[in-house]
Image 1: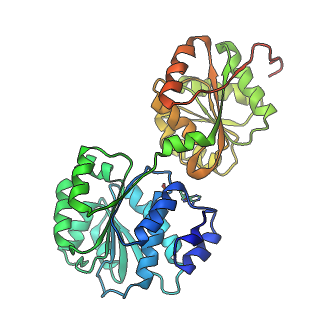
Image 2: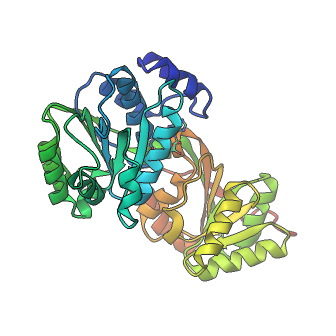
Image 3: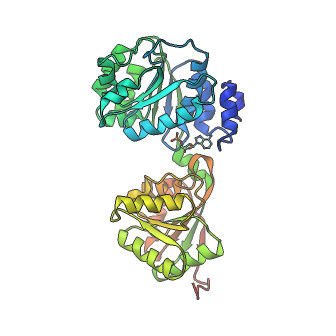
Length: 380
Ligand code: AMP
């Protein structure tokens, strides 16, 4: 399937051909045509699945065909739980909006910063990405008008509700036209989400993408039976013999992470640790270097694993197992983001065998083992 089969604007198809989006992700394959029908959509899809572009592309296509709204009349409103997500979504909209001869004006607004510059910047905005509290402030001060709204998106709806934005949402729903298209995206479907779904969506098309399972299928996994004292040499052997250029190694403690880094560096393998005991500055620097391909090995603990968003990471090595199977899936998920395939190698010591069986069961996948006791690790 390719992007050209959906009926997206030709300007977007041209823009897509210039990005690294070679083909639609599973959520995009089903969400883009569904949204283009004009119907409401409920998308159960987590971050990392390509869900943002799955609504950005059809919304921009629809707006490009619509009449221009009057000044300060928002045509598409995207409500998000956090400033970070607001900025991320704004970037995706802007990246694609600029491919049109008459680009839609896109703006993200959020609390925690002065409202005055945001009020002034509302001139001509047609796509607004907002956290609910700041949206209400802007609407109440007449900086924006919501009476001509064509589409409403609730992104990361589960998070919006966990942050207790229910009341704000209900107020906003009271201000917008009844006839509109509603899109709701959530990583999970719980009672709170179901309640808001009933309030917002009218006869929706329901789409479900289980990103973690999908991406697990893309990952080639191998487990190595190895005693604790041979883990260090095995790690160095694998990095060298497989000629790894970018590898993320997980340990279960900050102490172990530092120790692994020290050993790697002693053996002339470029490595840095990233964990909660490092300053924010140091973490940012290590991450930047690693992402840019200037650092070969990054050693991390689970606490920061969720914040690592790197596309096309070829290798993850579990030097030690995490306690929770969920963390295991999160760790190795780094290699299967948005359709890129990767390899996850897991070290299993004799004491870990039982726990690794549980992890495999929870993950619903059997991982092939390689024995290492015959492997000559001298010199590694
Ligand atoms: P999201 O789930 O929207 O947070 O997107 C996760 C990542 O996937 C982002 O870095 C996007 O740039 C990337 N992405 C989205 N769609 C595609 C695609 N069709 N092909 C490749 N990368 C994509």
